[in-house]
Image (cartoon, rainbow, N blue to C red; front, side):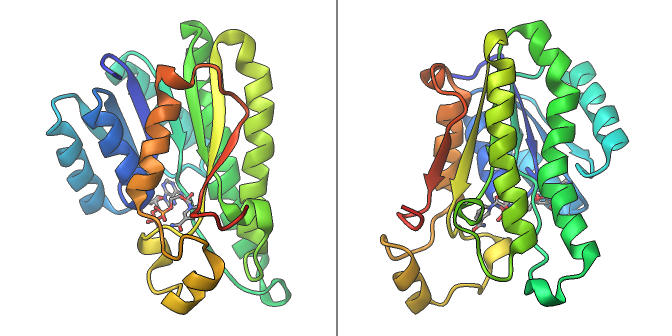
Length: 244
Ligand code: NDP
C-alpha cells in the first residue's frame, strides 16, 4: 500500500510514534525515525521496522531546535530521496496547576509539541511542493479540544496544533498536500503510565478503558494512504468517546 513512500515520524522510538513507524513499515513504507535521547529504544524500533523488508533509519534530533531539524531533514532527503508522509508525534508533558507552573515548563512544552511541528513542516515544505503530493499528520490530543486542569501548557500546545493543521491544510491544498490531525484520548504508553486508575477511566471514557498505540497507528495508516486523499484539515478523535 505504501511501497516506494518515505515516512518521517518524530518521536518514533517509543509509544504511539513507535506503533505508527511499525504500522507504516509493515505496509511498505521506508521510515525515518526521529528521537530525542533514548538511543536503545530508537535502535529497537529501527530493527523491528527493517524486519518488514523496507529501509528504516534512526535520527537523533530534538524537534524544538530549528537548526537541528533543518539539518536532519536535509540528511533524510539525501538518504531517502523524498518525503511523502510526515507524522508530527513527538511530545512531552510538564504538568502542574497554572498557579505553580514555571515559565520554563510552559516554554518547553510549547517548544516541543507545537514549535517542533512547525519546524518539521517548514523544513519539509519545499520537498512537498516539489513532489506535488504529501500527507502531514499531526498528533494533537483531546486535551487540546477539552482543556485539562494541570495541563494548561500541554492543552495550549495541542490546541495550537489544531490551528496549525487547518492553516497548513488550506495553504498546501492546491499543491496536492493533505494535513490532518489525530486527537488521542488516554493511550497506554510511558507518558500515561499509572496516570489513570480503572474507576477514573470508567467515569471519563464511555468505552471504559485506555486505548492502545496501535489504535492510533491504524488511523495514521489510513491518513497516510490514498484512501484519505479527499480529507484535509480534519481533526479525528481516537478516544473511546471521551471528548464527544
Ligand atoms: P511517549 O512519552 O511514550 O514517547 C514520546 C516520544 O517523543 C519518544 O519517542 C521521545 O523520544 C519523543 N520526544 C520527546 N521529546 C522530543 C524532542 N524534543 N524531539 C524529538 N523527539 C522527542 O509519548 P506517547 O507515545 O504517549 O505520545 C506521543 C504523542 O501523542 C505526544 O505528542 C503526546 O502528546 C500525544 N498524545 C498521547 C496521549 C497518551 O495518552 N499517551 C494522549 C493524547 C496525545 P525518546 O524516546 O528519545 O525520549
